[in-house]
Length: 151
Image (cartoon, rainbow, N blue to C red; front, side, top):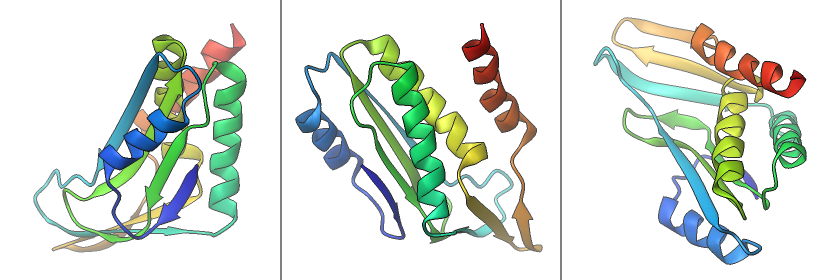
């Protein structure tokens, strides 16, 4: 299940849906990302996407995860629109027969979302507005999977 939406989500309902749909799962791993305000100046984070392109990029990430680990169908929700500090921005949930696969696939999906999903973030602060690029730490986390897969 993949959703790009402006509405908030209920993480406990998403977990229950994962549990209901899981095929003989021994583990469910989920991640909820929040909008941060590290400098206490954030008025809003505005996320934009290109419908169709964003979903396609995320589906490629999911396909790659499913080829690499034994997982059921992940649940991914990414919010777009105007968000405030503390708002939920992303949910990634993965179920698997084995916890290691669930952990690694969830981490992989999140790392890839940060760099490969077609989403644009604009930070609105007291000082003005600016579009954000992927952080070098996010790029490094995403690239480390290439090293793992190539070994």
